[in-house]
Length: 212
Image (cartoon, rainbow, N blue to C red; front, top):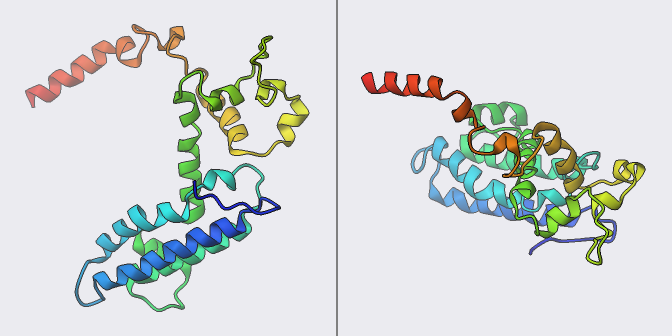
């Protein structure tokens, strides 16, 4: 799948490979124009956000999680975004990163990483119940031959606290926000949705929009 592992699972080689790949893409994008002609800064920013940044953050779930040492990763990613911001604005290479990020309208990499990490934490709960990720996140101890001894239900509280992974973060943070993802839960059954409980409010707003 394109993940690069090392003996210590630091993923330094992984982040180096993909940040260099993103930097190479930004260098190739310079052929699209220069400061006097070609695409404008807004188009450059869109190209970077859509094409280069996803490459650099590929597989971030492997190394970005609670209490993970990511100082090396952030240094490499900030270097990559600095190169992109300089290309977008056509400024001096000695310009400070925070300033050119603000002028180019780029979110700091760390904040962007936190945003997509929170979004990805919801994904396992949308998968089918028999999916392997749901089996790993299952807290219940099933007394059957097919019981998976690697799921969270088989871990003690101390082991859960010591375990570092994106799935552990997904388990605790998602359940803290959303009590249940089950479609059969009474809170999410038909007749209990927000639009059902506040149907008069939605009908009133819809009628006003039609009159306008």
